[in-house]
Every structure is written in C-alpha cells, then in structure tokens.
Figure 1 (tube, rainbow, N blue to C red):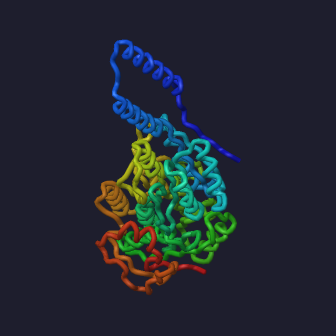
Figure 2 (cartoon, one colour):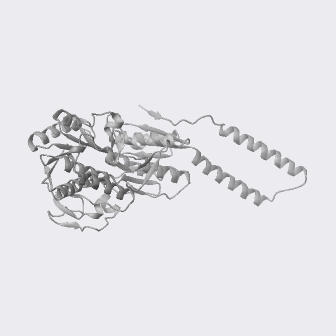
Figure 3 (cartoon, rainbow, N blue to C red):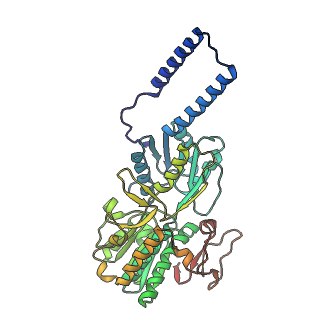
Length: 440
C-alpha cells in the first residue's frame, strides 16, 4: 500500500501560467527592439538564456522538494519509525514547498524499486530509515545524480557524493536517562531489553551505562546492569518474555529497552516498576502508559538531520556533507516557533529536569537533579560530552567485527578527556563498557 502525506500548499498561481506570461513579454520586447532597428549580439543572447535556465533550475529545486522516507517497519505502535514519520510531518508543516511521502515495511529487496517509484512521482530526497535496507540505495545514487539519498548508520560508513549517512548522538540523552535510572533503583538492579549486538546498539547502551555508573558513584550505590538480547528490533512476545525474566530472575526494578515494541513498557506497568523510554516521548506523543510508570524518555528529532539535507538541496549544493552525526548542540525551529535540540529527555510533553515523572521526583536526590540539569545545559552548549569525559574500559563483551577484535576485559581503549572521532563512534565502538552483565 502506498501512503502519502502532503504539506498544505495554499493557493498558488500555476508555474506554467507564469512562464507563458514571461515568454509573451519576451516576444513583445524582442519585436519592439527589432522594429526600432536595434539588434542583440548572438553570443550575448546565448549567455543570457543559459543564465536564465540555470536560475530557473535552481528555483525549481528550491520550490519543490519531496522528502520520501522508506520505513523498515510499520509506523503505528513503534517508537523508531514513529519518530521518523513525525519528522517528515513536521518538516512538511515547516516549509510550504516541502512534501513528505513514505512507504512502510520496506525490506532490502524492495528498497531500490520502491525508491525509483517514489522518484518517478517527484521525490528528490529519499531516506532508508535503517541501515540494512538503506544501504541498497547507494546502488542507484549515480543513476539519479540530482537526488539526495540517505541511510541510517548502524556501523557501515559507505558514502557517495549524493548518498548521505546519518545518525543522532542519542547517547547524550541516554546518559541523562542513566543518571535518573541509577537514582531510582532500590534493588540495585537495572535491566535492558535489547535487540542484538551491533555498534549502534552497543554505543547507545554505553551512554546509558555511563549515566548509571556516575549516579552510583555520586550516591554510593552498588548497581548491576543486565542486558538480554531478543534477536531483532520488533519481537513483542520475545521482548515481553525478557522483561518478565529480568524482573523475576534478576530482581530489576528499573527497565529500559533497545527494541521497538511496547511490550517492555506493558510489563513494567503490570509489575509496578519504573520504565525508561526510548526514541520518543511515549506518554506525550502516543499516550502510552503514564508518568506513574514512565520515569522519563528520550526524544529523537530526526527532523534536525533531515532539515540540513533539505536546506543543502534548496541551496543547490552538489557536494553536501555526507556524514551527519548531530547532537544536542544542533537544533531546529519548528513551524510553531518551538526550538528543539536533536535529542533531549522528554516526558508527557515536558523537557529537561521537568520531564522527570512527578511520582519519581521524591526518590531522586537533589544532587542528581542538579547534575542532570548541569550536564544537559553543557551538552546543549557543546561544552561537555559523556564519551569525551569518560574513559572507555572494555567489559570483554560485544561484537567482534572483521579486522576489529573485541578488546580484552579491563583494557582501557580510550582515556578520559580524549575526544573520540565520529567515525570511531559510528563504526568501531563494538564493545560493552565495564560493569555490565550480558545474559544468555
């Protein structure tokens, strides 16, 4: 099924009509010049026409942009594709000349034919919202040189002039979530329902782990973090089973996820433990559960990254930036004037410290609240980053990649204070940080 959401365009004078008027005016002007005996040098006329054509082409590019997102999953009931879909709608609202279209449940075998269909219908920016089904778009980038293609990064960093790779620095907001989760646990056990080992998953989990560990150190707590993998992103029964096991066998009283279904949240609500959300403000945008269960979520604004692509396309940029890895120090101003950083903690429509559940606040010491506020402000201003501030000590677990073995347990891979490159974080951060337990 083909789905299409269009922005409201308002009443516009048809471009063809305007061009006809312009041509009539030019003919009249030429006739008047000829009758008065004045002539134009042929070379000058050719140069003028060429400039006009170029200007018209640039104007057309700026005037009509269709952002097409191929979603690997369904949109409804998911936080990942839901956030991408919301980004497309917000950009169509922000710009009168931007349309948003999409297809759901797109696998790698149909990513290219669907993209070509979308392009034939006018799409000039085409996104694959997961790496496994976005990478095939690289195959047709040369065939459509005037189209921008984009794909989410999992660990591969292949690019072309018009094949752009992107990911937000979600780990920054996950670090703040970790501070809150570390303060909330009373049993000293926190669980993560996760998809499968990958650089993307491991990197995000490591941001959360650092936040939990900083809270534990500040509060003098001994906290265990348990991770169990479901095997894929959207497996509701398996995710439910893992959440129930983490509670019954590992005594966790705070749970979060690196999967896409609502099953872990359902279990948290049923069992009366705290849940920490991912990708979207699930209470505020979806109405899932309430702040008696959801302590906080992090919200991803993919529109910040797509906005850069749109503005580059409007400017006629033939060589746009091909790796976009934006964090809390980048933002977008929406149609209603609201400014939002790329990622942030959010809950029930509130952001920052105000996003923390009112029911959770009595259990969170003031020094944690102050640190959450301080670190958030510092990340928005670009003055601090958890992956720069902390040393990376290997847990000895993770995902061995070709040519990149796992560091031994206890090995310091990066010292505190050293800035890791975007390339390293996106493609080589393949190990869990020390202090996490990976369950079979």
